[in-house]
Length: 189
Image (cartoon, rainbow, N blue to C red; front, top):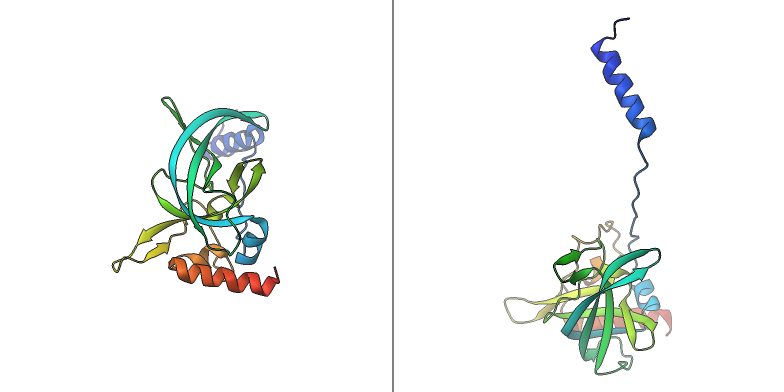
């Protein structure tokens, strides 16, 4: 029996499809600003002044997590800050010569000012709400005003005008504080 090249290719592809395992992935839903605020216990401006990575078991996997000591400058949501310094845990980081990255996770960089939306994870421990959607590094513009920068590389967000990342990206800290205050007033909190 002679097999044509086309039959061989089709047979090989069919076998590969039958024997292959399904791909796994996840989708991040763009959170509106109101929902991001609702899920957060604090919205703070500050700087990570220290950080270390450690191996931990998350679910059924061992992975690297980073604990960042975040020095709080001020809240921008009108709520009392929890302390002058808080500890923020994020997935990924470096332990020794090994590094691990979780796409979509916030990266609270050492020495970088940022606005963070956080919520309690354990006593005296916070996590960034909605991963990268709740973390906005502050970058000085040409006039010296600090502007929030959304990390669109970490999270693919739809063009929804309600998405917090779309609404906050490029705003100065006073503009962001005003936008947040209006959103809180609308929600009646």
